[in-house]
Image (spheres, rainbow, N blue to C red):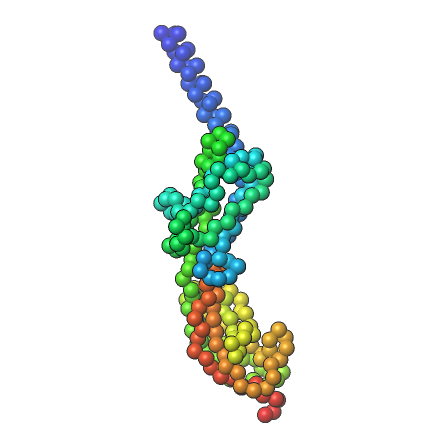
Length: 230
C-alpha cells in the first residue's frame, strides 16, 4: 500500500512539474501591432491592413486570416522562413479566391514549424467597406467678407468620421474627426491660409470614416466672397 501511495505521489509530482514547465514556456511571438480598421475598397492608403509582430526566434511560418468563427479566409504566407525580430504581414481584405471578405472582425493565426506551435493572435482587425453619410444642417452667413466673420457650419454625421468641405470641387477644409450626430466647423473663405478671390463658390461636404470610406457629397450650396463693405 505504501509503495502504491509513493508511486501515485511521484506520478502526481511529475505531472505537476511538466504542467508548470509548459506554463513557463514562452510564446514564440510577442508585441502584435495591427491596424484596427481598414477598407479594401477605399482606393486609399488604408486599403491594406498592416500586421506587425515580433518573433523570439527565426522560424518557418504559416500565416492565415480567420473570421470570428475561426474559419480560414486567406493564407498570407505558407511554409515561409522569417528571421528573429520584427516581421510584417499584409492583408488586402480579400479571401483566397480574390473576393472582398464580408465586413466584420478578423484575426491572424500563426503556425510555427519549430515546436509545432499554433497561435491565434488576440488582436483583431476590422474590415469596414460601408461609407458614412453626411447632411448639411446649417451654414451662415452665405456672404463672406474678406477678413470678416467666418461662416459657421453644422453637419450631421452617421458615424465617427471627418467632415470635409469642398469649394468648386476642391478641398478647402478638413474638420476634426467627430462622433455620430452634429459636428460643427467654421470656414473663413481661405484654403491653406490663402484667401480665395472674390466671387461665387459652390460648397459641398463629404465625410471620411477611420477605415478610409468616403461618403457621397451633400447637395451644393452657394456662397459669395466679397470685399469689405460691399
